[in-house]
Length: 104
Image (cartoon, rainbow, N blue to C red; front, side, top):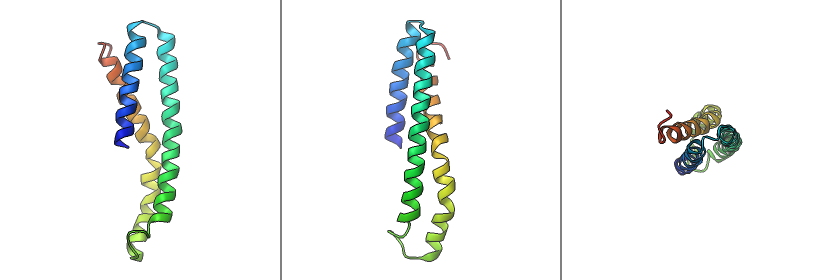
């Protein structure tokens, strides 16, 4: 997830800085919308992957029923927050992209 965050932030910063510098507000809106849509899709995908991995893979590292039960209780919270996390990373990248050219 950390590598994803860095890649998204750098890409968003570069894209937004370029279109802001050209003062092309339509491309700013399109770029922002596209990146946010990609973040939602990737966040939902990561959520599904983590939920399945944690639910079915909980017994890989332990056979203790109490630990596996605790993992299953935490799956919904951890997996459910991944879409929110990806959106937070994108907004941070967008903010830094705008701030890098003096708009934020």
